[in-house]
Structures are given as C-alpha cells and as structure tokens.
Image (tube, rainbow over all chains, first blue to last red; front, top):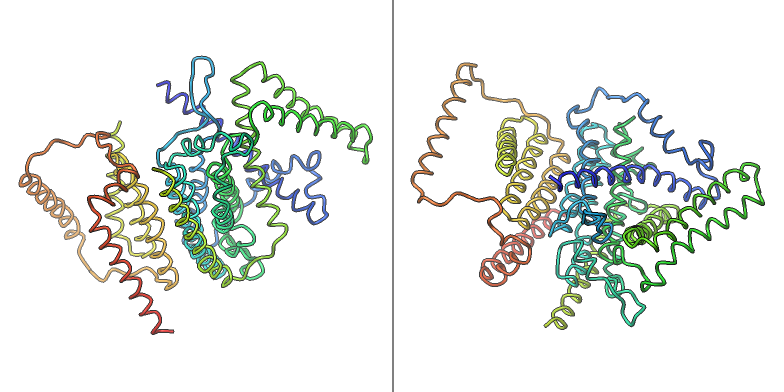
Length: 396
Length: 166
C-alpha cells in the first residue's frame, strides 16, 4: 500500500510541475522570440507579462468551443484528447534524479522505471501521430486534411533516423532502462571531461535533435501547420480547449523529447564538473542573477523596475540561500543538485528549440522529405554501424 | 489484480475486434484494429513479454496502421452501406447461434489439446530485449535471416512496381 501512496504523491507532484512548466514554457517562448525580433513580448498582464499564461488559460476556457457542422463528431472530439494524453504519458518513465532517502522512505526521483523505458517512449511517440492525423481528417477540411497527411508522412519518415540515433547510445550503455543509461554516464574522463554519450556520439546527438524538431512539428519542420499554405494546418477547425489541447501536446512533446536527449546523451542529472566545484555553480548563478537584478532595481531604467527587479532579486537570492543551506542537509543537496542539472540541461535544449524557431525559415515539403531519407537516414545508419563495430571490438 | 486487468483488456480486445467488423466506416475499422493491437500489447506485457509488447505497439500500431490510415485518408473512402438485408429476428437468433457455435468450437479445441498447467502471470522471465535478441541470433538464426530476405524481396518488388508507374 505504501507503494501506491508514494506513487500517487509522485504523480501529483509531477503532474502539477509539468502543467505549470507547459504554461510557462509558452510564456518563455513568446518572450525569447520577442527579444530575438527586438520586441518586448507579453508585457501587460502582471510584471513583465508573468501572469500571461493564466490569462491565456482563462481566455481559452471561457471561449466558445465551436463544433463545425461538417465534421466527423466522434473523431473530431477524440483527436485532442488523444494528443494530450499521449503527450503527457511518457513523462512517467523519465527519471529526474538518483535514489533518495527522505526519513523512512527510500525512493527514486522517477514515477516508474521500466527496463524497456526507451522503447516505451518510442512506442508512445509513434502512436502520437494518430492524434494529428485524425484531427486533420475528421475536420473534413482540405487544409486540415493536407496538414494531417503531411504530419503523418513526416513523423513516420523522421521516426526512422530518430530511433537509429537513439540506438547508438543504447549500444554503449547495453540496456534499455533510463536509470541504467544515466548511471553509465557517471564519472569523468581524465578527471574533468564528463563521460556523457554526447562526446563519442556527437553525430547521433545531432541527428536526434534534428529529427526531434520534425517529430514535434516545430520550425523549421512545421509543415503540418504551415500557415502561409494551409491556414493553420490540422487544427484549423479547432477552437477553445480542444485547440489548447493540441497546443499543450506540442509543448509536452518538446519537454519529453528534450528530457530523453538529456538522459541519453547529456548524462541526465550528472553535473558537468567534479563534485566539490559543481555544488557551488547554482549558488554563483542564482546569487549573481539576484545581485544584477538588485543593482538594476536600485538604478531603475523604467519606473516599474523600482519594484519588480528587487522582488526578482529577493527570489533569486532566496533560491541561492536554499542551495547554500542544502550544504548542511545531504538529502536536500542530492535532490536539489540533481534537479538543477537535469532542469538546466532540459531548459537549455528547450531554449535551442525556441532559438531555432526565431532563426530558421521553414523548409519546403520535398526538401523536408529528401533531407530525412537522403541525409539523416544514411548518416544515422553509418553512425550506428560504426558504434556497433567499436563496441564489438572493445567489449570482450 | 492481474486477473482483473486481464479481463478488462481481453474484453476491450474482443469488443474492438467485433467493432472492427461491424463498423461501416474504414477509419473506424482501422482504429478498432489499433485498439485490438494495443490491448494485445498489454496482455503480452502481463505475460512477461515486455519487448514483444513494445514491438507490437511500435511496429503494428505505430507504423503499419499509420500507413493504413494514411491510405484510407488519401483515397477519402466514405462509409459503406450494408448490402445485406436481414430481418431483426434473424439478427438476434444469429447472434445467439454464433455465440453457441464459437463456444462449441473453443470447447472442442480445449478438450482435444493435452492438459497443461494454467498460465501464471509474471512467471515467464525470458521476455526482455536482451533475451529475445540472444534467441534470435542463436536458436532462431535461420528463420531470422530468411525473414530478412523475404522483406528484402518485398521491398524490391515494391520498388519495381512503383518504377513502372512513373
């Protein structure tokens, strides 16, 4: 029974954190894109637009959900549910940190560990294509249908290089469990280079990230919703919460795919520096950020900054203080350090996703397909063969 | 607990199987087939065949059925009317007779097979990816290689057929 209660608590925490992350990821995306284009991004709702996600949720819930008369009702309503359910389910096998003991309870910072966790994520993502395809088809609209068809073709094509790029670090780790894969990346070469899979598998990592852009329908591969040709692609006919469900699914897929990249290639929750140094980095970062905010708060450029920036400084310095305090509580330090490095790596990859969206133009459809089959597929195949050869020669 | 899960997903599998035949719309039929495959994957998982379960979802539900749905969407096949006109009486009696017939067949099969021990959930442990891989490359090497040649022939055939069209 203990297991059940523990799992429920973990699931509740995970769901709450994930939902908040998804809402604020969208705020961050709008802010980053805004600053890339020399705009301010959301600014009106709350200080620096911080309450914008809340306002968006209220707007989307209170909007009228239009059910067009020409749609196939069952599948039209099923598609957004499918999208969001399949996008949220794979987070269950993602580990965020090592085993921790809090009082009498010893548990992993993970909802559940499958000894085929990688296959589970692949299986869920391969089924995820139905949501987009069904949504596009059930809308009974030629733009939606074209978007759905493009999406299914694109996702099938890019799943191949994605899976092959995934297979190379699996060969190195000799397991399919996320925990064991991360454990295999602990330690340092020569005392300072982290033993992450990204160094021997740099080609695989590049292929994985590129294919991940296509799998999540992000720019430059967002052909399913290319608004200059397809209005809004597969979700043209959707409104209100069913539109929000597709939107949420996209962001949840981004989080999942970056988390998988972090676990397989970037060493999961392991720090990039040996132990005594790595523990000071979060304190330096948060304290430095807090001090900069405090300085600008005391020398305000705009009138509002007098209040908002010192408040931000207090928050940042408080986080730095918590990290400092954790030096005296070993359990807290384990948890905080694991979360810091894991979230830092995932956050960096998410930033790259947003950065690319602000930088690259969209591909043409035939270029997209040719790129998958003529460049990425042979590249990942050769990478897998070379890795296999090296593993076979070295492991005896 | 395991028995409850078994009956839930076995029920879903049978329901989806009937729905596959009963639906008039091809997309609905294809989705029912996906439901059958998904619930079968969970039954494999219960039996300890983790790798087979994952492969079932990835290959059948995630790849093959996507192509089916893709083709149905491209052809834009609509719902088909039932050409068979049967009276309501015949329909209900037919259902009962069908159930009796299937029960009889399953009874005969069960009676004619040698008695074995019942399946114990979780007793089978050779279902991990490593076990399956080792078996494929040692005991079942010849069937494995022959299958790969078969797939190669199918691929070449598809390319030859497609080339003639262009």
